[in-house]
Image (cartoon, rainbow, N blue to C red; front, side):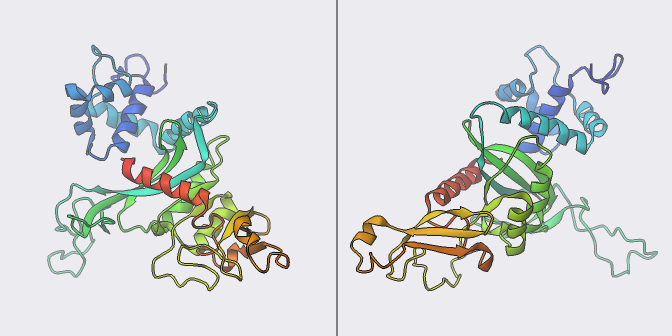
Length: 328
């Protein structure tokens, strides 16, 4: 029996049930509190939720008090230990996880706040001091909506940043972090990768991301410190080099699109070769060595280790769109 719940304790549920209840709480954005989760678990239409936390029909649903008590006793780091142990077990299943392809994305979490109408300063005269008023949730912040169609431009709350791995069962969340909505995406990428180092035998290779996560220094450090290649799109207003066409493909001196031939992680050179079909009809076929390279550090956005238009880039882009449409 878990030391968290010894004989005579008030919680009858095993730690696995409680952990899964919390996993459900943190992954379903429509669940706003432990009280709300308890209420939803009791609703007949949410049998799948009860199946997930392993509560049979006659068993009692965990109360909101017991879930709050469990979270307090377990603590953040122990939650990570449990989660990472589960991921490590999943990685041992033959062909289940595909860490070669992963993605990072974020979701807005709206805070249930009033205000701003309260000052939290230490001034004696709070009525007349110049200190700003805060929301009833002091950790919430104003953020910008990414998709503003039929939405307000701004919201108050948090953003949940998640790294997701490809699998046979669809996108699998590996780790999430919730931060105030005004924390920029680029400041979250490296801490997430650093935390994932604790997962035994898990090695991410390519991480698809939107341009909110792009920063030259951070993306270079992700490769240098974590051996993870971050793949993004190119901004529409980016000035392209002369040897890149409108389809974002590098071309040879004769203007023929080149074929990606790999990335050297030691020299950080991205290699290309000529297209055999185009080379055969080229006047310079016998004088051209047909191999070209670009160094990643010279322009990390343009000289991506996963060139735009390559087969791998298309797969990463497709997976990121899948994550964007399915991530809770």
